[in-house]
Length: 338
Image (cartoon, rainbow, N blue to C red; front, side, top):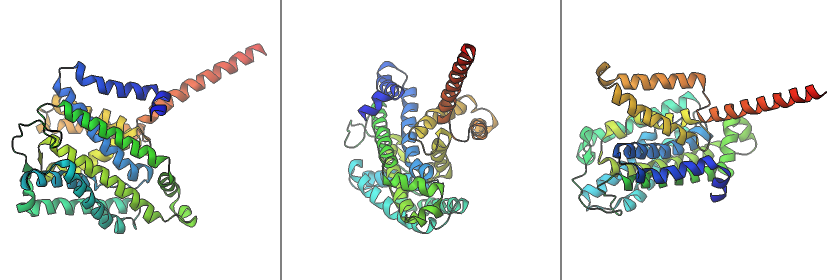
């Protein structure tokens, strides 16, 4: 990782700015927004494993995000304030079981049929959270009581800064996980299946097993993020955490940033999260509060139309443009000499 950062000065600058930023600003709102950016970057990295490298567009992300959130908050509020660092292991175990239940039948489908199947699974899970009201709090959800203690073990803090660094470190960990997968067998198999599944299977790659493995890793990462996020948020309800909107936001972070790239979801989160905050803040009085979402959606449509490969590829286009200009200059110089 250190060697990689030395070769990538922009990455080193980004990490340094993120570390220094909360110490040089007194604006806690900006710290809160960046914390949200880090959490959604982590979620985007998790989605990118199956959706980007494997090209399996899953819209069940909110389901596994909610598994982590609800497990953490239920065990804390109803079973003697069990630490999230303990409950998250149970949550990830549950997410593995759920990923197998969803993945085994769904990965027999391809393309849009797989996506529709994941939407159906997410809908069933959300309705289950609402139906089992006595356990999950139903549509009202569950909220923490006022927590006055400062405790890393219980993720209880008075200010925003601890959650800022927790989210930042977890985002870096998810980047390392994706980088490891990208450079190892699972990543190679996923790209092979993505390019041509039939050809990959003819070479002996079991596409269903490979995609299920990637799906399980992705779901566990989302579940871990959900546990951290709910302790920062302070409550869990199905209309927020298990909604289709949440699944779409998670997927869009990776899609707009650049699917199948290491830094694409992080770049996507750095743009989409502040953009949504700005549109909601300045357009909340128009259209009954929906104008912000409309502008947000319009900008997404424009981006998809004009840069479908993701924002990260704009940098490649700029670099290619200057390389082309440099090459043309050398050709003109050579022609003038001859």
